[in-house]
Image 1: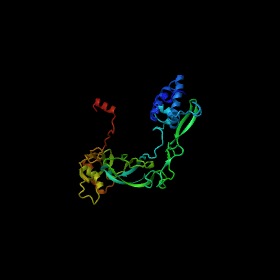
Image 2: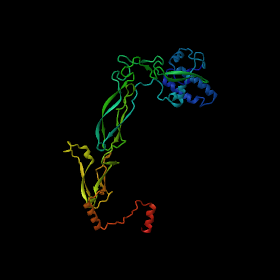
Image 3: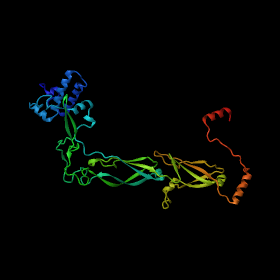
Length: 391
């Protein structure tokens, strides 16, 4: 190869490594046999590749600048080779094999993983918010080595196999010459350095398992499945890297009185048949009553009960909506409380009670009621038919 290698790549003799690599990528996109089948282009591609093989290697480039033969026997011989990785870089803009992020040693320090724990809270705590202390078993930075993984007084040293590059070359013969691919160094696992004296506390990982106590503030209005994010409270990363996030998933325990539907609360109140017929007034507890214990009831400012009027003649299944007594929403507002009345029919009567009921039935003409059959559901077509027939 008599042509000047710098001229082949179109760069100045004092060009740095990045400039040389960019020039090679540009030419490889134009001349690669998969792109340009012209035999002349293929020959030029071989020359450009050989030039890049020399100028991208500091030792070969120095030998070439001094006038020596950097190929050691001519182009295509045993000494010739090129980086298959750089050809892939020319077309895909990254490291060969889809590794991404370019070549070079891996970082020992990496971000930790996110963690998830589940926390059960009462319905009142979910509705009005609560602060809880959590004990979390997680990875924390090793205090003995401060996260670098080396025993006190020592430090990582460059890997003798890859000389700190984190990669080793694998050479394979092909019709283009010798194809060189880069792989993570097996000695240092791609880090470029080894720890000759690992920390005895963390075995060189830079982190240890420990139990921590955290305080999590549960906002008002959460429901089962809601996740509260605690930034940078998750696992510390390898090499003492920054921690991930901790997610607290809420599980709301069943309530003995109230059932939650969205931001509304539902409950059922059972009244005797006589109270439903004559009407009555009831005092029922609110959800806030769960937050007030016996000592803190006075001066708490919370409404622990409300009054419900049962109108005379109330039927079983009747619902009363109490506005603003439901669950606060995460974005403001508050749901309602829906109270369903269940009328209880007596199952055991003494002689006097039975006598009075029979007398009442006689007065109302209900000794032998015929009963009324009512449709529980009417279809759309049935309603349309009745609208036209007047039924």
